[in-house]
Image (cartoon, rainbow, N blue to C red; front, side, top):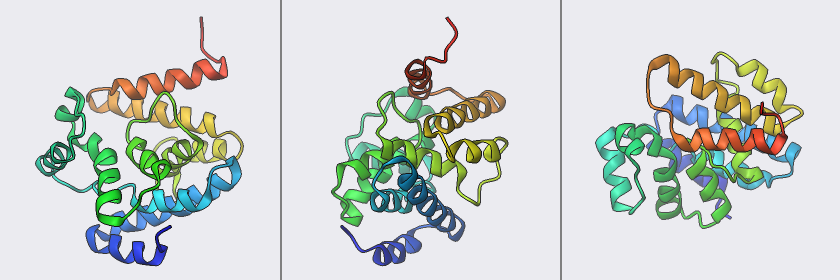
Length: 193
């Protein structure tokens, strides 16, 4: 596994200071959640540090990198290239930072829209990204409380908050996020028939 101090030094050179601070917050939060919910804490830290390495790219740069990496880009990716920052970051983590662990790369790739079939590490990173200490969005305190006891409840609330925000600003809902949310409800048996 790659040296964390080396990673931090390299990441801090490619990210704005506020994004780096966020990534360290996500790494710390992901490690705690991983210990609590049975994921690998070291993998969670590495995924947290690297999850946003592509976050600040301009739309044209994001699309260019996605095409170069031969990523499958849906109409939602073309309409909202920011949603590609997870998959693009996973490619960068592999190619530019030497991360070869498929679990870490998958968690990074999925942290933007989720998936119907998320591993514990995927869920840990997704939630950590939304609740790290620098976050101040509407439901953050409630999601933090949920994350103390029930990772899936916290994940569901993360999807709910993201969907509410997308509706509020009038942007597209990514169908993968909707499917991921529905999968949690079905698995929990907590949907209305």
